[in-house]
Amino acid sequence: MNSELKQTPPYDHEQDATSSSTTNPGKIVAADSLQAEDVPTVPIDSLELVASLQPAISVHSVDMTPFPNLPAPLVGQSSEQERSLSEWLQIWWDGIRPNYLSLSLLPILLGTTLAWADTVHPQTPLGRLDLNRLVGCVVLVMLIQIGGHLTNDYYDYVHGVDTGNLFGPGGLIQQRYVKPTLVLMIGLILLGMGTTLGLVFSIGRGSLVYLLGLLAVLGAYFFSATPRPLSSMALGEITGFILFGPLLTLGACMAQTGGSFTGSAFIYSLPLGFLAMAVIHTNNIRDRETDASAQKLTLVHLIGLKVSRFIYILLICIAYGIIGILGIVHRGPHLILITFWTLPLLAVAISGIIRTKASASFHTVMRETLQIEIYFVLLLVLGLILTALIPVLSHVPAHLLPF
Image (cartoon, rainbow, N blue to C red; front, side, top):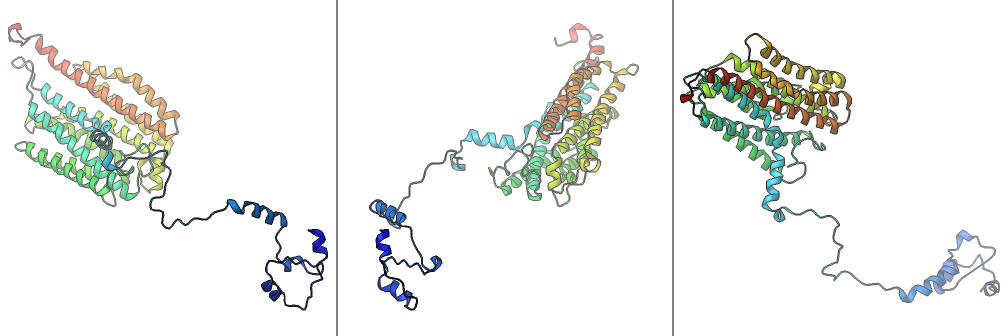
């Protein structure tokens, strides 16, 4: 090949290069006097390689291919039509956040117990309790809280809050399980049902009971609703204190007593309010980064992480301090001091809030605080029941007792 190229006559610069290339496009021209960049060349080895592959190259049109074959995905998510009833129930159960329902149910239990304890006498050693009103209060607060959770999830989604938070809302909207408008509609329906039921149960209980019920509904809705929600104005902790402390405790007590206000119910509701504040405050500590990205103002942003740890400990100590004072005073209900059996759990929670910095660890502390409140209230209720029963049962004739 090289010898043939050397025998090729010299290239004439005055000759039209374009005419020679068009008349004989397949001819390879080489000239020592011509610059390499002026003549497009192709390596001979490449031409030989293409020539050797040419029989194996084939071109087919895909215009008429009706069904292209695509590989199946390794992980596929089932559509809404393919989800079973049990799967939908689990999705909605997680969406209503059942772990937080104890915040509203515990005040109902405490308020009912306080009202029952005032009716324990030698003539009625087991006291008087209106079970229908107790059940009504439980259903009422569950409807309001679940409705509040769903509407809050919708407005948090609209405001861009908790969109990337793994520990935040139930995920009905964030995981695209349910349309946002459907979540809002169901939340408003539940709030409306709770309001209607509250009006029915408040008949004959006085205007104060109506006011407490109205405040409960408004607090549940406006916690995250409107462009300026309560939770975005550093009022989340205060709102939780009022709702899950005095308001629900007094409401449950007055539902049993016919609308009568009792000072003891207000005093005993304060520890529940401070514990609820601690839960919400820990929630805000956990979400401080995502809240900051969504421009949501919380108490944690105002005072900082270090002071927030101190506030958490202070809230817990106030709750236990109130019970300690009530139980230690002369002729006080000493048996309520059994609530201090929860101190080992409290030590674990305080240790966690002091040492941790990760959101997942703060989430664990929040769940521990919820657990502390559950045991705290259950033991408090037990202490109140024993305090009411023991003095009376010891003076009641045996034949008057039902057991």
